[in-house]
Image (tube, rainbow, N blue to C red; front, side):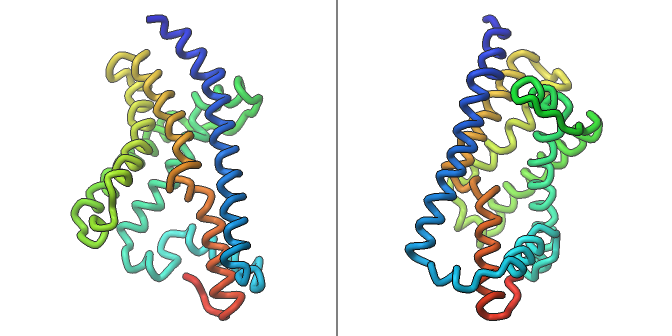
Length: 221
C-alpha cells in the first residue's frame, strides 16, 4: 500500500474538507440555536449584560470557582485537565504546527515534545477517570448512553494513536494514518454532536449569566 499517497490525500483535500465542515457546521449550529432562542426565549435578551455574561463564563473556566465544582473537586480537576490538554496539544504540538503552516500558512508557538508527551498522558489519564466515573457513579451512569461512551473514546483515540506513532509503538505508517483519520472524524463529529459544547458552552454560560445576574442580580456560579 502506498502510504505516501494516502498521507498526501489526508493532509490535503481531506484536511480542507474536515475544517470546512467543522467551522461551517459550528456556524450553522450557532445560527440555528440563535434563531431558536429568538423564537422561544427572546425575553433573555431583555436582560443582556456583557459583564454578567463574561463573569459567568470566566467562573466556569476556573477550577473550583463555582459551588458545584467545589462539591466535586476531583471531578472538577479531571474535567479541567481533560479540556485544557484537549485544546493545548492539538494546537501547539510541534508536528501540528508544521501542518498548520503548510496547509494554512499559520505559524504558532509550539510545545516542547517532552511537555506535549506529558500533557497527552494527562489527557489519557483524565479520560480513563471520566470513563470509570460514568461507570461507577449511579447518578452519572443512569444519564450516560452508549453514545456518550463512544464520544469519550473517540475524543481520546487520536491522542493515544498520536502518542503511539510518535514513540513508534507499532507500525508507524499505520498508526500515523489512523491518528489522522481519527482526528478528522472527531472534528467532523463536533458540530453534529454534543461535542459542540466546545463552542456552545460560552453561549450557554453567557445566557445563564444574563438570566441570573442581569435579571435577578444573583450569581450563576
